[in-house]
Length: 326
Ligand code: PMP
Image (cartoon, rainbow, N blue to C red; front, side, top):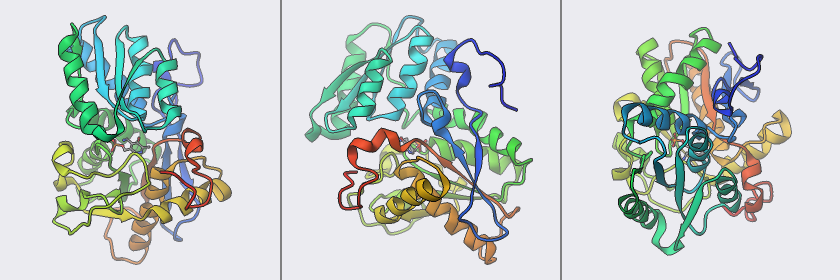
């Protein structure tokens, strides 16, 4: 299956084909598997969309060779786009609100991208506005807009979904994944429902996020420390399709933090808070399948661990819950 046994020509060829590994703290008879996306060269799930979106935009002529990609991003998407941009002969500029993780900004710069900081008080909205202004000022510049670009979902429909089904010979009962843009979950879910329309699909969000409103559920907005998933305004989440989702499971920060620590200590996974939340939600779904409360076509659950904890050491991810600065 993997192409990693032969010498490869470019770092872009190392993107995808990540390992699917069994999570041992699961109910008897319902195995839980996690796709370890930190195995990508930029160490996150976003390398997939960085490569996929730029390649398709170049093919379609939406982006000119030698052009510039401008994206408002706080992190992993910038790194994923930067990995691909340099190899594909495209310049990259990222507009990042000041407060975001220093590790991520240093990595984007090391990959050759230009970083423009916007004031923390202007939030992500300020960064989005500045990115569009810049793109207008520059020649041959485009904003991929991961929150609205169907290529984001398509990247996972074409790669992550098929890889999961190949690894498990199609025996996938439920798919569980965190939603930031929702590209990861939507791409896998669309592929999964084509394989078996009864596949159970659960979205994961932090407590305080509003994704549940898409399914008509009450949500109370609040701050959360879990990084990379959740929404404060569902109008911005254009990729999320409620028809593909059975459940939106909200995980409190404290549970995600306990679980990411457990995953490191007991199972050897150096993963971050969105993976901790995904793991909690995957166990919840597996337990319901084991108890007969969810009728899934197979007794198995697959989730995604989007990135590594090393990216968040400066935020005290392995300190106590109170000392963790999400
Ligand atoms: N976890 C982390 C750490 C992320 O950076 C992201 C992307 N924002 C996600 C999960 C969610 O992925 P998606 O945008 O595909 O929903």
